[in-house]
Length: 408
Ligand code: UD1
Image (cartoon, rainbow, N blue to C red; front, side, top):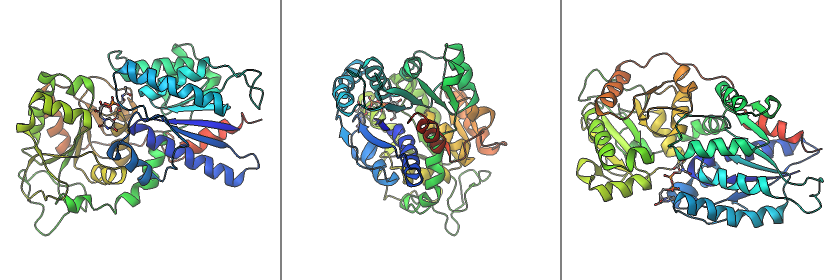
């Protein structure tokens, strides 16, 4: 059986890495190996957003790189569709597997769902089976481009692999047959658990001057203790949602809140390219300092420290050892839940409620006072947490076991 795997943007790479690992493991044991073709759409394309992830995670070089690059939603989606269609026609896969909720996910789903192999492919299929990994997540917020991508991808998919129980309820409500839904766990967590120890060898804490040294625990706020044996207390921030960074007033308010939290402990802010562009455009640079990773954060210094986006292992080391994470990312809500690191989400909703009911996550919205209150509360009260069901490092294997049943 031939499976065509689609990866396009940064959060896809961790999920695809788990699937590829599981295919390799399956092929070592099985008399019916799975052939795979990895297609990179090129939605994310540079060293920091793409190449370093392939290296860190040991993902093989894609067989096809569509090289679409950036653009408006319509341009990017259309360009991926135009370039993806001939690849599917040529490869005639039995399965097209997409992950997550980015523009590459919906663009490739739409192409594969309408395709027809003249006369059928080798297994006699008229079109590829469509599998969606991370199906059924819903924020209920249709102003989020990702919510549109999720709804449409699920509507067109044949197989729905879910990460949390709520997802099945959403899918059934939207008319998906229960027999097509498989609760398998979380491929992003597979990758985190696999690389966690390796990430501890990252030099990023030393480079940022955050590693614990004699007398290195003097924080501006004596009550804030580092949760990590290796590092001083610090927070990590990530922001890239258009709703947070594309509007100058909203973005300014968030930065003011972070500045207030940053009087209690240093904040490390790896800045997404979209966010960097908005900082320049809105003239917000005065509030935050960009620095090379090699510049130390002096003991006792607080404030927001901006750095370039980090590779997978360095970023995992940063979040694992953080006292607090403030984010608007979906994946980071999940990663902090598994790591047991308090997470404050700067959004009004989440498509990943299990990170709140089981994990360390709290939604605070984007109002200045709410971010400050939520951040400071989490600094002092970590609260209990549990790892969600099936977030055990084996989601990729479950997916491949189910897919291989279709090989006959
Ligand atoms: C995309 C996804 C979002 C995901 C995020 C992770 C959609 C609709 N959005 O948003 O769900 O959480 O990726 O990062 O698919 N850029 C670079 N280098 C790159 C890629 C982008 O510098 O390799 C810059 C470009 O200036 C681009 C901007 O980043 O315009 C935004 O990239 P884009 O892919 O449009 O959306 P993201 O905000 O990254």
